[in-house]
Structure formats: structure tokens, C-alpha cells
Amino acid sequence: MTPYKLDSRAWQESWDRQQEAFMPDREHRFTAMLDVVDAVLPDAAERSARILDLAGGTGSIALRALARFPSAEVTVADLDPALLAIADASLAGRATLVTADLREAGWAERLPHRGYDAVLTATALHWLTPQRLAELYRELTTVLRPGGVFVNADHMPDEALPDLSRRLVARADARRDARYATGAVLSWHDWWDRAALDPVLAPLVEQRHRLYSEPHSSEWLPPASWHLDALRAAGFAETGVVWRGGTDAAVAAVTTEVVVTPA
Ligand SMILES: C[S@@+](CC[C@H](N)C(=O)[O-])C[C@H]1O[C@@H](n2cnc3c(N)ncnc32)[C@H](O)[C@@H]1O
Image (cartoon, helix red, strand yellow):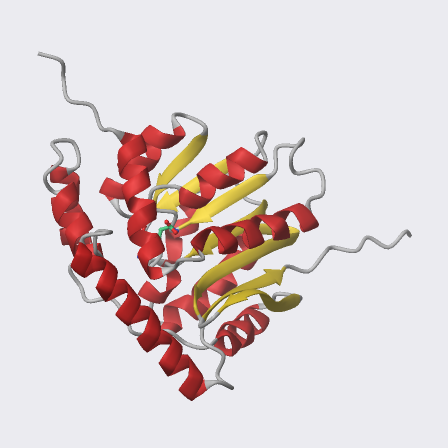
């Protein structure tokens, strides 16, 4: 009998569809994030730029970064063993995978490098408490090289549009529910139920449920202005919004360049 092998391509595709149900413009934000890397590192396609896909899950950003910057040295850091197994099979040795819990201050010690050119993260850091996220932003200033860039894309409403933002979220929820009702796409819970039926993923999904048994602060979704204030307080030199799609946004922050003055 042929041993069962994880079909990483199929799992990757179904993960993307499941995530796109929440974010129909998901690819746009990834492109905007990689445009930032391109702007900071114009030669990124040729040189081995160090890119960290933070809380990268199945390696969505890592895969797109490698497609655009084939010589990049990419790291994916995440805690979820099931998603990391899909990342491992999809990336097939083209990236370093690191198991790290961002809730813990020492997570960065597990990284293979210091001095990353770019740290990119999407739809993930809202799982952390506000206090922990502010600390993580401080830690990232040491993970990055001077002049390196951090980009975080997530649900980050514009606080100047409170009523319109509520309406946009309600409209998006209704559209997603309609898609779930027709079976057009799997919901988050259905996706995990399906993963628990895969012979390779099943034990990892069980492990994952134990790792994430504490309720996370998933309802804490501050406006972009909170992130910009926290990034400035963390010591980043330049901070701002580089992409917005409705109530989601991507904020970018650049660490201070070391200026060497001739003696
Ligand atoms: C919705 S997924 C997004 C994954 C990926 N960035 C993407 O866009 O496809 C959120 C990710 O955050 C990771 N995550 C959440 N809390 C974490 C923690 N404390 N430490 C490490 N990773 C964490 C999850 O395991 C998951 O992979």
C-alpha cells in the first residue's frame, strides 16, 4: 500500500480560499507588503534579502516572497504544528521553519538570524493582548537590521469612520455567511474539522487545539492609529499606513538607519 502523503498543494489552496472568504482583497495586501520590501531593498530579487514571515502559518507570505524574490533567505515563525506542516511541505526546503510562541518574550532567540531586512505579518497579531503586542513591536526593532522594515496587515479600521466601518463589517459578514450557506467556501471551523480528518494533520490539529486552548484576544482589533502609536513608542523611525482596503489596513514601520559620520 502506498503510504499516505500530505497534499500540500490542495491544503494550501483550501487555506487560501478559507482566508479569502474573510479578505477578498487578500492578494492585494500581500502585493502591497512585497512592494514595500521592493522599495526598501530595490535589489531584493538578486540578493539574499532576509525576510521573516511572522505568525506565517502555512507560509502564505513566504511563498509569495520567494516567487518575487527567489534569492531571499526566508524564515517562517509560527506556533501551529498543523499549519507549519503544510508550510514545510509547500516550501520544500526553500525556507527555515521555526516553532515560536509570540506570547513569550524569548521567541526571537529561536530565529536563525538577527538583522532581518523585512518582517512581514498578516491577519495574526490580533491574537495577542495589547500589552504583549506593544512589547513585540519593541522586540522587532532588534530582530530587524537598522533601516529594515516591518509590515503588519490586519483588521485595522479607520477610527474617523466608526459608523461606516460598522456598516462595512456587517456587509462583509453577510456576504461571507451567504457563501458559507451555499458551500462555496469552508468556514474557519469547517476547515479545521476537515484538517482533523487528514491522516497526517489529525494529530497535529489535536496538538494545536491544546496549544491554543486559552481564549486569545481575537476580539481586540484596534484602529490603525493604535498600531502607529505603538510602533513609534517602540522606537521605529518612520511609521504609516501603506495599504487600506475598507476596514483592513497594512501599517509599515522602518527602523532607524545607523548613520556613520566620518571622523
Ligand atoms: C489567520 S492565520 C494567518 C496566517 C498567515 N499569515 C496567512 O495570512 O495565511 C494566524 C496565524 O497566527 C499564528 N499565531 C497566533 N498566535 C500565535 C502565537 N502566540 N505564536 C505564534 N503564532 C501565532 C497562528 O498559528 C496562525 O498561523
